[in-house]
Image (cartoon, rainbow, N blue to C red; front, top):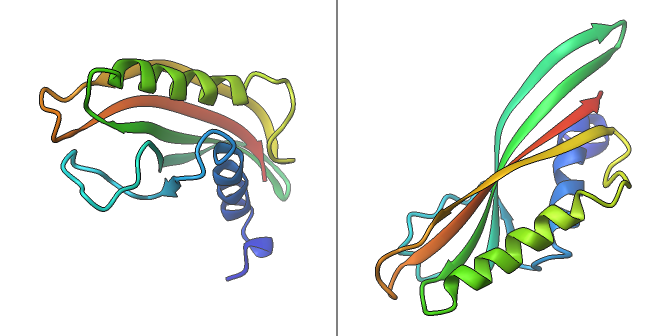
Length: 136
């Protein structure tokens, strides 16, 4: 189905394009276990977690879309700083006061959870929860 008929898909496409301003290597729906060898790093991984309809008025619905956005880097002595830089840039994207997609009414970003791997052979992550209130 074309994305013009599916507003949720259009929002996700716009979100991925927006995040590519931070890292061109942004992937949707890619779950990493921490030992991938085929993932160009650093990367941003996006997972759609939920879509909740909060209210409806006729054909229009106000929904909340929840995403987990993971900044990923290979573990080394600079990993913490790399992940801090990536998550700072991600947060900054959503605090400009401008909508990244016309359907978005508000965007909130939660705290950042860090998972630094103990070995240089593994991947480390910084996870940010992103909530977008949209009208569809």
